[in-house]
Image 1 (cartoon, helix red, strand yellow):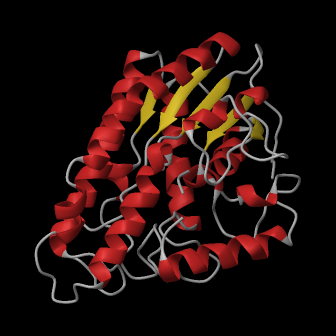
Image 2: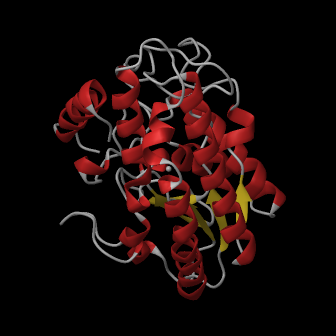
Length: 291
């Protein structure tokens, strides 16, 4: 989801972690086998912040235990991971930073596998939804109604619907640049509980938890449709991750809450979450004949 930017304490935590990573040398892992290019945002890039991927831009916060690295090692694929925190679909064709060129620059006619995990940052959807709803919910410790839904209404779902043409265009361009590649669109995992809430661990009312869950389901549904309509395989990471959301205990959750556990980033997959996404991807790759 440019996976993964928040407000207040979450923003401070993210900035602190990013600054710490800037002192490290972050990205890339490879093995013998087919050529695999990983494209995407922070939900692709970020794993455990103590394992920065050597040679990658520090602001991309890319880690060697993210799902592309784990899956590539498991399947013996030669990985070129150009995923970057904060990436939008536009960053497939335009540079994100001076040292982070367009992600499509990594594609070649000989590329055999491409994964794309993008869309959450387009139109600032995740940033505005998470930051806005957390800020509004922080004022409502009594768990009354759906104050964020009352403010934003259909703003986020409308933005997601308008973005489908951009995702479709990106997939079409991937096929042009890497005509031999098998292409996979990796969806976003379940971030919030299916019912109830866990205020103040996440400062959302029960009603707004439902509201944001519906937004994520809408986003993943759009990505599935775009994949199926443009010669790509959709990898569902949402369904397998239900029950491992940010409200669960540290030993159970695959997504970190506002105040994360050690060496993790708020509202993003932790190392366990990345391992499970890698397993979902590996199953899809094997089913498509990649092994």
